[in-house]
Length: 199
Image (tube, rainbow, N blue to C red; front, side):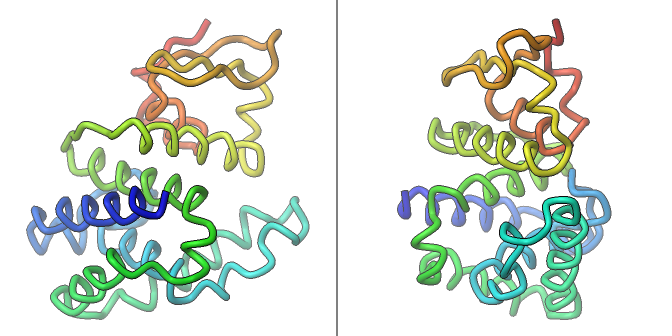
């Protein structure tokens, strides 16, 4: 899984390298209020400032979303004024040398990485083919975050149309779509709703 994580990190860098300075610093992503620069700052921060996320899972579930937002804001603020060339140089190191904590959680963190890559890709009106492991990781991330944030997974039977098993209550209304679209929707990215079939 660590090699797939490295590969997806390299793909993120390739996507970002194709953006103009304006798009990089101020372009739209599916993460409300975040530019591609901010998304990259968050992703790098998971490796280098992991302490910001300490205790999130062990804390009060009722305040999880607020505490997560606060931790994410601290990460993005750290890189907001950094020159793009310096930030991208840092990203090149981040791509090939995951931290020890990231190595231990590579399967889980691949989902966060892949969702945020799609935030950039889709926000910029681009497209790409997702490797099978990445599609599966996006859906895993959606199932996890939905259980903690918006509870959609408990109100719907999630049925992937491109592989993988259904999830959620058997008696709940179905929502069908690709693993990528389902995962993004479960994390709250409603831009993908037109791609889903609700029954």
